[in-house]
Each structure stands twice: as structure tokens, then as C-alpha cells.
Image (cartoon, rainbow, N blue to C red; front, side, top):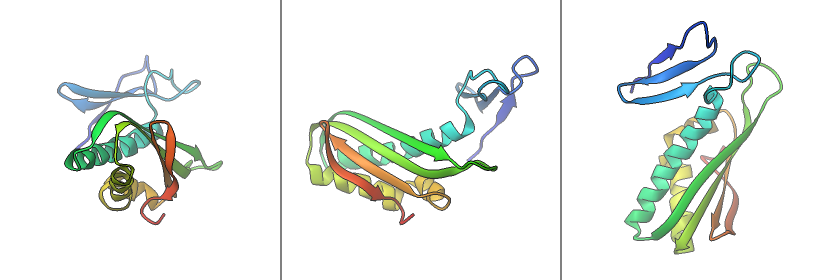
Length: 149
């Protein structure tokens, strides 16, 4: 794996671009240090958790022959009050729609959050990670713990 960060220059003092070739992510700090023209590194960490677990869950549900009509994954975290500001706890929420076997959905999320998602496993070493699953607007599992965090 490799990542390359490039500073955008003096006119955008806290803006950086990650990536090479055709794939880029813009990072920035909120005002007053930056201009808020990109995601913060901590926001990208939450996005990484969502992306990693979402790929696991969708791959597993495809394997289980589940008809997923729509899927979103959200993560939120509060930060500690002192530096270095770290996540106190991360809460991940899955939202699925479709004609789904609820036990298969629970199993897919549980396997991702306790066995497969490397990003969540790394974060769980520093802060507890919990997850909640909604299917067709109804909670089917609430506040489950990832990686015994």
C-alpha cells in the first residue's frame, strides 16, 4: 500500500491532495487554519471505516444471494478534549432497504465488524466501535460491539 500527500501551496495553507493518477482526495482544515475545502484526516478515517465495512457487507450479502435495493453506512465520533484529539467512541450505522433475510444481514455486519474489516480493527484498538443496523427503517440490531473494543 502507498499514499502520497501533496501540499497545495501558500494560497491554500492547510489544503492537501492525496493520490496519484486519476484518483484524488482533497483534505483541508476548517477555518481559521484552513478554508474547509476538503475532508479532514479524521473525517477520512471515518470514511475509511465506512468504506471497508460497506465493501465487506455488500460482498457477503451478494454471496448470500440477498436482494439489496439500497445501502448506506454512516460513522460518527466525538473527539477527546485534549491533544492529541482522538476518537472517544465510534458509532457506525448501516441502513439497508430491500427484501432481505434479517439474520443474513446481521451475520454480514457481525462478520465485518468482528473478523474482516481491518480499518475497524485498527481503530478499535484506540476507541470502542459500536454499530447499529436498520433494515427498511427498522432497527434489527443496536449497539453491537466491534472487535471486542
